[in-house]
Image (cartoon, rainbow, N blue to C red; front, top):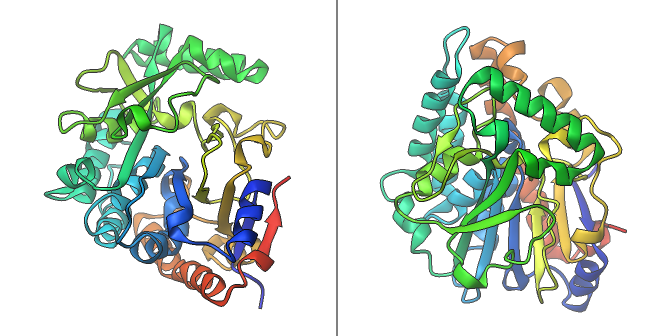
Length: 355
């Protein structure tokens, strides 16, 4: 039977796994979560296994979680006291509670997703995330600059067009319109304090700003409203604008970066999606183990792809809900296969070197 998973490991990660006879949770020190909206439904089974089994207590060393957009919502689930229950709330809200009028405006989309986020967090999610004994959450947003700081739709559209055009020449040009902001609970031990590829600001994640930061991290320009975050200047937008799949310098840490992803490749920024030559190389992923659904698994899903935003336009509400629920259930097999690979010691044999 064809494998349901694709596994890629950088040279340092592969050497580590071989030296230690496989994957151990205590050897992982960073978990990234990419932007991708509904795509998280396609790897729900992986998340349930990782969040509910592999990372189950006890743990003493810090685990740094970093995400943009839906990736930050996934990390917010992981850092709650019962991460599997938080995931279930998030999936329910995303599948069943996203109901819109035929032509929703930005305010309606923001209001619907605000309620979905509140449901994901539950009554105690904020305090559980902030007080977690070992998990350190990092939420990426894009702070608006220049024309992108305008709440007026025509001006924002111009800013995005300029940003997209300039990005074709260099990703560094994004700094003219957006500045990466990382809200986090890691203080001065965050492994991302050294980032210099784009202008980056670090701010503490607090009870006053956590909800707003998570909402902003997923607020797609033009589709949603920008978010004002307490204690931070400007309007904030989807963190995927600057960091779509988190092509970050993860540093020379002693452990592994475990990256459960939608694809076997990494796209640096939101404007790079349509640029086939703009794919991340292996440089930032030397100590990363990437785990993604295999082409065989994806081909077996309804429509032959994992969910994405097109489903809102290509299907009726009932069809979308049915498809997403079917994929949610099918994804359980991903977690089961990963568990089997780890427990039998066959994980290393299934890995393709990331060179």
